[in-house]
Image 1 (cartoon, rainbow over the protein chains, first blue to last red):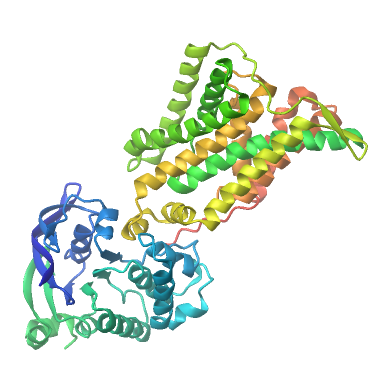
Image 2 (image 1 turned 45 degrees about the vertical axis):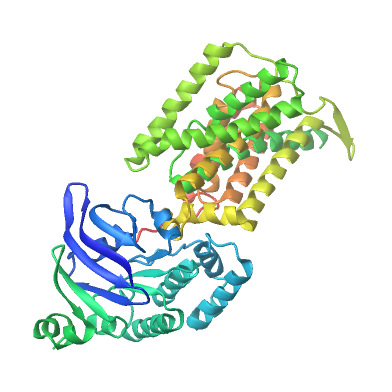
Length: 236
Length: 293
């Protein structure tokens, strides 16, 4: 069952068109990657889904056309966007950040349980629970950003460069936790990542973007076998 | 000593009025990054609304409560149908729009109710009470208490409720807030509404003393802005303390410094402001804004 489908999606910032026609689909419980160089349109593809950029084409979620909704309406459908640069609330404590993530929910008990789950998933956050998000390290902020998204109980997670600016071991920790989340929760994921090695540990398939278009789409195994992918993204 | 305490308490009371207006300005600034120069004008409109109702025979306290409801709606409407049009543009444009709004409100109030001073009934008796051998005006105590209570309620809303948490989140990062499903536009309307309510409380409390005119809060707005700068735009507590300091110093200087007197007392907060800004550009309690590159 397809959960999210993009068909020939275009997007522009003012007069500058960034996406020329991107198509992809994420199955229910699946994880799909978007690879590509800087400026290829990876982040913009995610922004097109969460309605923070002007788009054309077709974007359907769970069979419904979601183009033209506001970002908060998209979130209410069950799409949680973890933006590039993390977007945590610096002046709020870790716990408050998580509560903001649960804004649309009213099941107090479930919220408390999910906070506990997030702290179990990211033990680093446990000891920082009362600190302001701005006092956290880069890795901890990334963990908090993912945890905040989990708190909304999404059906689809949009993950933008979760490894950006992190030490390799920290990035690996973050991806380990996300993989565990995937297997335990079944949340579908659309993952933008520069580091293809990391991405391939999480996703079942991926598409490669170049100047706002798909140039290559395949399963993780297929892509790993291709020479041009190895040369361009896997360092060998 | 008796005069001194009287002056301090009267200063605290005028300082509280500046504080309410200053907090309203901080509230809007933290949510939108704008200084709303029409904050005082909107409060004056609320005071006229209450005054009009009392003239129709509505009891004063009911009239003030209704004017508070009116203010909340006014603030929300101004955000939704005026300020939002300028949200994504140059912030300077939006600030100029608020100045235009102030001019417009003043003009409309003058047109509807003339520029003559109107008597506004006082919520508190004009008597004094004896306190430790010093006679203090009930109105000054009442004004201070009401505004402190309003601030405590506001603080409780921000710290203790889900709505308050959402308002703070939107102020810090509207995009991330939207990604968590927060209705950013509606929350901004609530923020502007709450700011207008604070202004309305200040207006209703100070109107009996100043008498009601379209420009009644123009001076108070200037003092409130001084308090905002002095206390630091990022610190609500700092802003309140600064407003009290300004109110008290202004009163004391007028009486104890013969050179200043009542004519020059308006300069006192600005001299203070000048000195503070030289020493601490971020204000007494504000944080330095660090821009990472």
